[in-house]
Image (tube, rainbow, N blue to C red):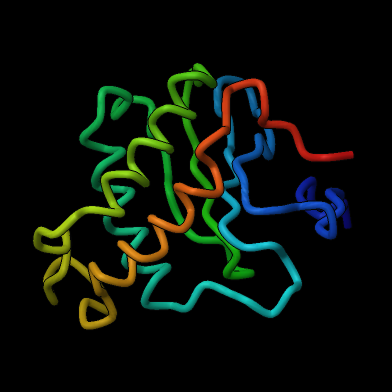
Length: 152
């Protein structure tokens, strides 16, 4: 079997940050890493699910909404992937930072929190997303579009 591109990155060097994971034609995959891999401190399922609902809704309501392809969690529970079409890295970095700032202070109803809209609607809590987003905002406050490469 061929080796998956993300398995070629040295996960011992990854820290909470945002990285460009891959570029496929006009689609850029951003690795939104919220936890240092393999340290035992993972994102719990309620937090992952809650951030997923809020971030996906906010991104698809943003000025870049037509270029958002996907936002979802990593199986390793350390972050998320954001797939964008025709990515302008500065705009995407600003989008990520702004959405996490919005999530940190969000106090409205959880989007998609009904049995009709979600397969596990009871597993959502705005407060968990607030707490995690506030922490992540501090970690990426100095992030710019020039800082998106994995460390070698």
